[in-house]
Image 1 (cartoon, one colour):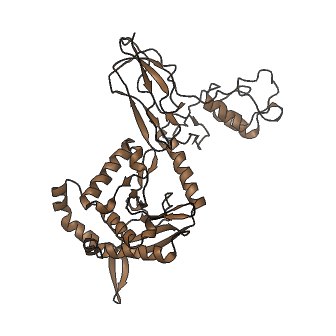
Image 2 (image 1 turned 135 degrees about the horizontal axis):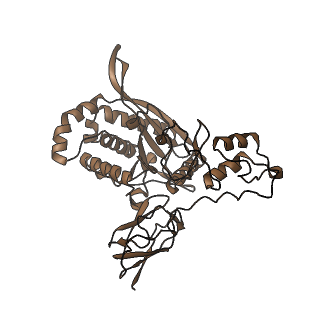
Image 3 (image 1 turned 90 degrees about the vertical axis):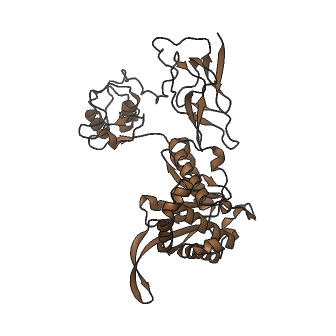
Length: 414
């Protein structure tokens, strides 16, 4: 027997732990070299763990949902083994279950269910005495019933989801739903990525003096240029010409004029960055991620569109690397793709400003005393007032407005 160890890949310096998601193989099943065995989620990215050699998965050491560190042993492969005709039950790979509800308190004959608990037990067809009480004098609380149903400590003849409630109305996750009549609930733990996003958003609000300035942009010049160039651009570069490349170019244009918008705070120092790494906020199935366009000032429109398209695919598939989301000097969030009309974006630490772009809609505008219809977009820029004064923030956003309303400025850098 030749055993090969499967270990957690190296994590980034800022990531201490990761969570095992779901094993794709069971003990006793054959695996091919480089076949993905499991995905591991950190607070930044999802990493794939390939099989280091072909053979049979002989042992799973860390089950689904387990917490691991870099280089930790998680499984073993027998390179000389043969797959069983029927794979052995993957007991070790079973999802980490919630602690089972306490066994019915047989000795507590006088245990009484509180009114809310009694109703919930009736809804779930639970017999009296089948749930252990943790309340005063052994009384059964609503929490006891919820724990019992979720943990599988009791048997119920009722369906988990009430009749007439479509299953797709609840998140498709492994945590059990709780029958509350016509008011179903489902409790699921945050993913590491979602928890990290929550932590950073709270950090941003608690450490930055955030203000937001707004302006309205007439998108007609950009839309006209895009319409004229779209076909030739796509034929030449193999990618569609979107609006985001214009937004990135306009942002870089403004950051060059007002460098403090591209700066960050480090203790009592202001760090002015001589490069322009623009973070692009992207929604993914696992949460918000912000991959970085490195040296965006040196990128062409085509380079930007190709990179953003690549980021979108990687975010959807959970393939973004840690290095692709590290750093950044300024961010752009385009809620307009989802129909957002107005918002106040939250700064992505340690950056000091972020641009929020919204949906473009036809509006009645007054030009030269005449009411005309123009495709307008509200831009919002949140900034850290500790180092950015209102003057720089407002003028920076005006510079973006002027660049988009007269795109020729981007060519001549004026």
